[in-house]
Image 1 (cartoon, rainbow, N blue to C red):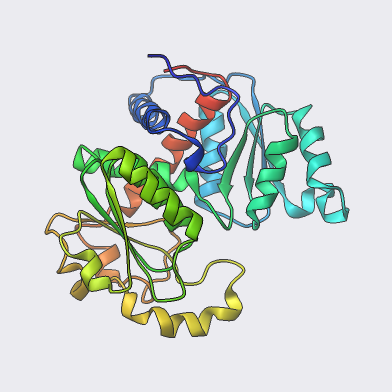
Image 2: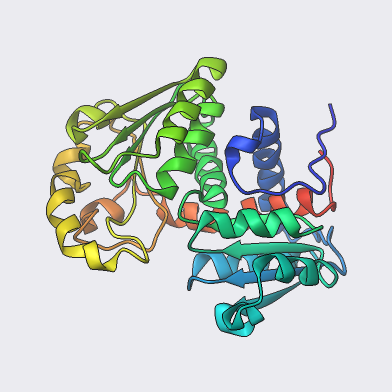
Length: 315
């Protein structure tokens, strides 16, 4: 069956079926192979990508700029100060104007509503490169990495330890759609959004996976195939940093915690890491860590996504 995602927005992985997510992952695997053997794949020759970044970035900016170049297109980077948004132009008007110039829009924003408004008023595909609610591109790279290392996703125990944030949301959604047994361990009061919990439970019932929310990290990581964590304080939460360090201290991923996982568990982190806070050096630099492969796969997963939604390839 041919799956065409041409013209689709990618705001949240809940909008995509299991088959569509698997199509992106298969395409990412193909893109990575082509990249490694030096096979040209300029499937977006002459296309232009507009990239709106309200938040600074390393992996997201570099991977999208390199990715669109390798696909034969060009990326235009706009910080918040580069656009008329800072002078009061609405997101709707910005979306309408950019749609006359570019073939796709990537947006890394604070509020999820901003990327929703971009998609509502743009006539070209809009890709969410991070919002306060969702980080779909990260989750695609995460599950590409798990698939590479483990050979499957369905049936694996994928455990997220830390804040129930945007990264946790996308990991939950994609994992439960793909048949994984997803566990999230957070301090009380820092749980994922209720909507996402309901989505994950519904996805799991359909895929044969499962979802569990716990408040004990030791119980959560027992026999884990994957342990994932993220920073305790995200951009925009700096005023809460000291309080969060106290609350999240028992949720640090360290050598004592990971003893409860399977011996061949994978350690994952979306990066940047605050070493000594959410994770210790001996874990992130240890033999079970796949964070650098995970970071690289942002490039391949996003190339696959761009190629599919911007009309360069059908699978």
